Length: 287
Image (cartoon, rainbow, N blue to C red):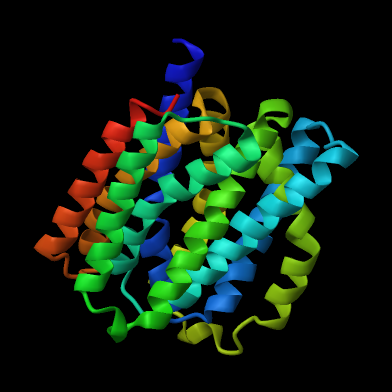
């Protein structure tokens, strides 16, 4: 299997893992404070990352890599989890999942800025059309109903796209496993202290679904998924493999309906299918 195909396979595995992130976060924040969920998931994943680094004797990043690692930490370890957790207090995971349709465009833009990639003009045409479908869907649902939730989701998409692109760029030299592990370790001291300080006083009142959601986002969304995702972006190209994120709303909507019993409207499905079609066409012109 050539490097590009391997990149797409790794990227697809990462997307499948990420697809359950929003439903799992939604389950967690129904009974746990969103800020606690954010710091707890980072602290748990950071401890696992530290164990991984020590056990497998992974190489240390260079001093020149620290700025990039800080960007990854702020983007995907703190920024995206916190903003989505706050947003999910105002919108359902099914509604928020459709915003993930903007992630390929966000990632591609930062891939140009930070990764030096240059997709052809047709790529941007299809990507913008797909993004417009997502925004149109949100508007059709009545943005006035939850403007704060939608605004937080849009901010999450921006910081996540930056974190994805920066991590992929760094993975070319450092490796996908090392990038996410060192980013988590960088945030570990602050996240661990914050998690202890914000620990709920009545743990007995928190049900199994909330703990299961926290466990999933800590182990899989925060660590395992990124190992495959960053490796895929580095191997197959940030803009190109980034288009696989358009499968995430599809999987996420199915999970929201199956696991949380949330209503998935026909317009949600149509918007998701339309965006997937646009970005699938854009993939052809990504290089």
